[in-house]
Image (tube, rainbow, N blue to C red):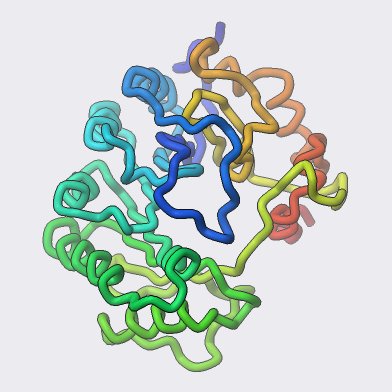
Length: 301
């Protein structure tokens, strides 16, 4: 067995899926076919005890809606106990007074709201009640946690410059709320994706992408990915995966219920993947069919 204290690899983040259950079903976020699962508190504590020395932060998200977990408060407290900063992504629909208090605790470093989720579920309905909750949280954060990073994500651009009509309305509402304005024609995802609105609040823009799937056509055996170099993921059932887009654990490296995480990361399959990317080579079939990996072509070159 490998001593985790001797495992010197430091990851930028580790995605911990505390639940794969979501209260929404977005068109750009495929359905999870795994068994519906919420991570138990003992398993989460076991994970945090091991990953604390390995990462700069934990992201309490992979699939699912983290604000729906009934023990979210306890999980955030456990992160505080192990002094590991929290990064959390939510659709924001479940925000209330209690959950706001949880997200404003000092251990939480960043909160991301996928505001593009509204259109994907509610179409042309009035977006004001939804955004009012997100704006209220932000105002409270400005007062109580001015050091908290907040991202409003619109990851639904149909190409490098175009927003769908509803998301254009959402962006306009954000601009009106904060007196912030993106210059006409200024969006170019090749140059910039994040725009500071105020304090530590940012508007983050990106285009849609296809989730990797074994049913997808073959792309290439060459390519680079940050999976296992700056991040990896842990599913709600304890499966360790190299990539935050491996939603069905196709590339399962091990199980935290039965193996130390350091052993899993030092295992032969993980090493083969890492060595492959170092040589600009995709050794796994899922990676060879992944369209998202094209975003790292410049890095590979």
